[in-house]
Length: 476
Image 1: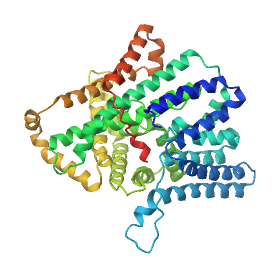
Image 2 (image 1 turned 135 degrees about the horizontal axis):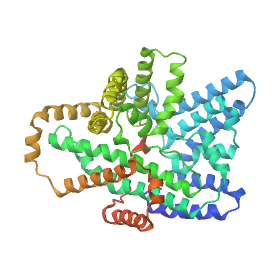
Image 3 (image 1 turned 45 degrees about the vertical axis):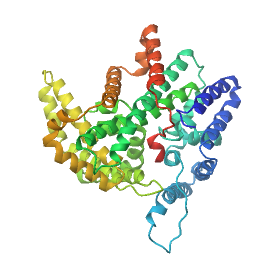
Image 4 (image 1 turned 60 degrees about the vertical axis):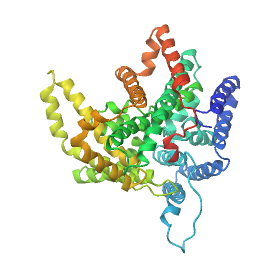
C-alpha cells in the first residue's frame, strides 16, 4: 500500500475520519492498529520483523527505567547489540557468505522500512538511558513510536520525547491544520509521481548500459537522477508529514530545498535527510569524539560517519553495493576538505560583505556544492562500483568535446518535458526558500491557494505516472 496507490488514497481518509470520530481513549489503539495494518499490506511477515524490534526495545526499556546503573548499562548494550545483529543478519549475512560452501544461508532479507524503525529503536533506547524522565511513555506509545505508518518506511527518524509530546498534546484540530496537511501531502505526491517517476525511465535505461550509452546521455541521466532521488525521497517525507498532520501529529522537517545548499556541511546537516544526519551526529559522531576536539579526531569522525552511512546503504540483503562505500568516502572527503578550507571561505565572505559580488559568490558556491554532490550520486545510482567508474571516466573523457556534442545531439520532446519539470520544481522551491511552504500558503490570498491546489491536481492527472513505482529509500 504505497502512498501513491489507490488503496492508500482510500485508507488515509477513512483512517483520519475514524480517528477524529472515536473517543479520545480509543484513538491511540486505533493509530496502532492502522499502522500495523498498513505495514502488513506489503507482507504479513513484515509484522514479525517489526515485532522482533519492538520486543527487543520493550525488554531493554524495562531495565532502562530502573535506578540500577550496571543493569541499565547492560540493558542498553544488549538492546543495541540485538538490533544491530538482526540488521546485520538480514542485510549482509547472505551476500557476505556467498562462495563459502560450508556456511549456511538464511534466505532472508530486510523488509521495507526495517532500517528506519531499527534506527528509531536505537534512538529510543539511548535517549531513555540518557534522559529517562523526558522520555517516559507507555508501552502503547513506544509501539506507536516505532510503527507509526507515515514515517515507518523511510523516516523521518523521530525522537521519542517530541513524538510523545505530540501524542499527549491533544490540541483541537482546526480546518487550517487539515488544509496544510492536505497541501503538504499533495505537494509530495506531485514531486513523486510527476517529477521523480517521469525522470526514472530515462535514468534507468541510460544507467543500464553505461559502457554503451552516449556520453552526453550519461551526463543528462546523472543530472536527472539528482532530481529524481530528491523528489522521490523528499516527496515521501512531504506525504508522510502531511498524512501525519491530518491526525494532529507533527513530524519533523527532513528535507529543506537541498540543492540550494552553499556548503557540503549545510547540505548534509541542514538540508538533506536531516533526521538521519542528526542520528549519526548524536549516536555515532559525538560518542566517537568524546571530550577530544583535535583536528585529526574530527576528520576521522567525519570519515567514519560517512563510511558507516555507505555501509548501511550498501547492505541490500540481495547483494553488497560497494559503490555506496565510494559515495560515502567521497562525501566524507568533501567534508574534510571543506573543514580544512573553512578559514579561507570565511575570509572570502568577510571581504565580499556588502559588495555586489556577494550574490555571485553565493550562486557559485551553490553550483559547486551541487556538482560535487552530483559526482557522488553517480556511485549511488550505478548498479555496481565498476559501472560507476565507467560513467565517471566516460563523462570525463567527453568533457572537452561537450559543446560540440550538445550541438549535434538529437534532443527530443522527452528531454524538453523532463527539463521543464526540473525548472518548474526549482522555480517553486526558489519561491519557498525565503518563506516556508506553511507560512506562504497560510498568508497567500484564497484564490492563489486554490489555484496552486488545482495546478497540482491537474499536474497529477495529466503528467502523473501511477504504475506503482516504489520509493527509492524503501530498499534500505
